[in-house]
Amino acid sequence: MSADDHPVLFERTLRPNPPMNIGALVFVAAGIATINLGFGLYFILRGAWPVTPFVGFDVILLAWAFHASFHAARCYERICLTPTMLRVEHHPVRGRPIRFEFNPYWVRVDFREAPGRGRSLALASHGRFVQIGAFLAPAQKLSVAQGLTAALARSRQTHFD
Image (cartoon, rainbow, N blue to C red; front, side, top):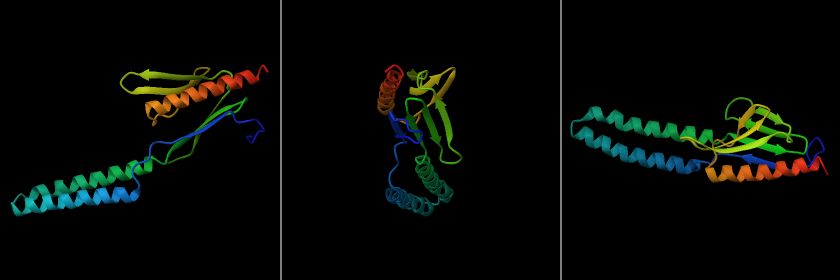
């Protein structure tokens, strides 16, 4: 039961696929840094020392990309459906969570092919659209859409039983 004494018909926490663990990221970055150090020494010995900073710059960019990927994977979305309310909470990496609440009787799951961007998954009700699971793979979006559609159908049946 939920806090407002209604049964939870659907509850799911959506998370992006995590990057490698921190040890593997450090290992890959250190390996590439070692290889680039060898290239840098080669260029210095050949008299092409101006190339060396660029060889080091790509390691810095790779480390920054690993860092950004690792922190971006901490965001998540929580979806909770009861017979009286559908709540979606977006928890970004930084900032406060954003909460959307819908009447489950009127909400519609909108799963469609977006030109050039793959599939999109959104909830629509009374002119409001909330995109969910933007970071999910297409198969995961389909699974969430099917599960949520079935749960919404069950919640609508409880109104008439």
